[in-house]
Length: 170
Image (spheres, rainbow, N blue to C red):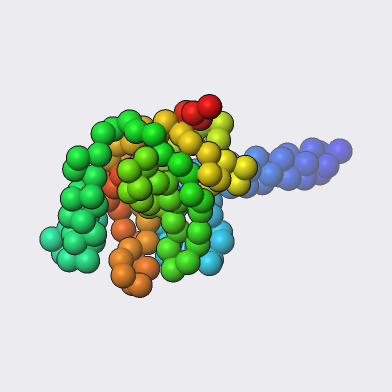
């Protein structure tokens, strides 16, 4: 009878010890967020304020990104933070494009932005049914991760024009 008691006691100790080791290993080595090897080198869009703070890419060390940001600043310098624009659509070519055109005929591409679409979109996309619909669009400079520049497809993080609110204009 004592043999069985010692045997089962030993089994119980081994079981409890191995469970505790597995839990501590899991805490020290959490699972990666994504196991999709295709997207390993392409940063994901920063679309919510609850995501960890992204470290911006140094503009001085990346001249193409610096040129891209300067060009975006020039394009957006006189654009009001809220304006009326028609959603032209989305396109994935070399890069993702999310285009709107304002009432003056100026095109705006928010494809690199950390956009918030509310009820009009899902993930990084606006539903197709809103193509050619007018919106009251509010935008701001937000930190976003995206692929840049001129065919390089280099993962970068920078503040770019981003949609912060959309309101359908009837």
